[in-house]
Length: 167
Image (cartoon, rainbow, N blue to C red):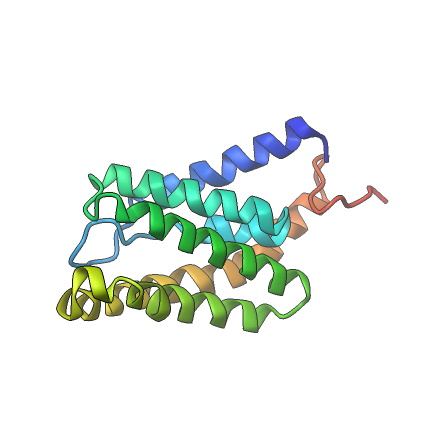
């Protein structure tokens, strides 16, 4: 894939993450949204590193649109999201699709918020987990369904992903 095509696809996935940020999941904070699926798709279809970047940018843009309710803690969340996107891509590309999805759901819905227990307190973290878990399930399962369809669409287009050769 040429550099220009890579940048165009990266921009498209970040744009989809921003669009997904407007589909909110009810939560105590306003930044829980349907914005992770494009990062998971980018990680699976382009590279884990691209998924990491889309997840970081996507989360920061989602948080910005919500007014940064957690302040500078959103930088930590962006790193968490990036790492989850990266490892999702690694597992998915090794054909461990179910493991990738479960890792993302457990990591994003349960483990990531537990890191904030000392800072935000027990009540806030436990209040966030249900909405984060719901968002993780929706994002993860949607990615699992959509990625093969995106891959199929790209096979029939002029733009290749995953360095595929036109046959």
